[in-house]
Image 1 (cartoon, one colour):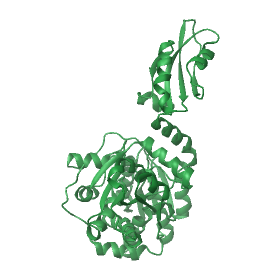
Image 2: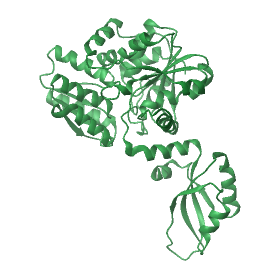
Image 3: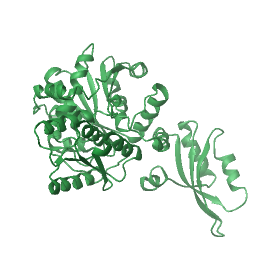
Image 4: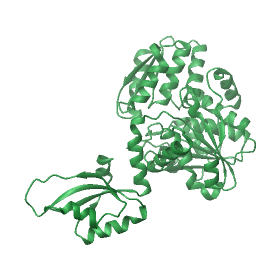
Length: 422
């Protein structure tokens, strides 16, 4: 998807001012060369490690810049309020404690416990958490209502010029750190604040750099909006990539991104999970789903980035360890190792033993089995999850199941059923 190049960007001087405002709070994060990814893709791959910020995400840049500006202007006598799925909340909480400002933070009920605990830790007595709704958008509405009734200043997570300017300071660092010009930058997109900020700087100082926005497949709000030519609210989203799952991007962010992004693509959540596991197992880097989006997109650009200098924005590492089993499951499903079936079992002794002997491969494993004998019919249905040692063995497994009369249906193609199992 190619983008209209008419520019409408915040002022570069304002970004430089924001940098001075936040320099004593925000870390100058490393731009790290990654040898494994570089060899894998035949390119020079660098990771901008925003997961190493004090709140483990880039969100501190924009939040502190906005709140500090209001503080300097004397506009926060009634405190501040925000809505966030996690990382913006932590940035706001951290800023509240630094500036000794009372903040009220609205978060979805579905927010991982780890992120709630982090907000409490960073904000201390200065941040109050209120859990409302199942999505960011529901929390945002509650926060807007609170701002109107209380007089608290609303700190938007992305649709705000000073938020964008704060996020843009990250791009100034990349330009200083790179030894050669970056040919491509892959940027995760939730509401669009980070992409807007990076675009602000690079379209002024490095026009040749290709800016690629990356969204989760289950929440492609920016990609859809650019395709439609108008900011479009999605009717429903998959909230798994919680740091980037919003139904509607910011109006300001949409206008900037559609004018300056070279492309906007989406990545399957299963691919994101596989990237998280690869980074953890091979580099000991712990990423949250949104933090792995940019790296997950490299496969789609394999041909274009060959022999090029590429930067991936690693946006955050606030991952709850209790989610790792689900992450592993989604990765196995995506790569074709894990399969779920509805299986017809003859109601006789030894039926399961025959299934194991004559259907499964020597190194395959049953990882899920649901069956209850409730009647005296000749056959009964069971839900069976099978993990293959080789994903190429799937067709053979299915064929044996059909030939021996066990096969009833394949559940991986049924999202409603699969979501109940995973």
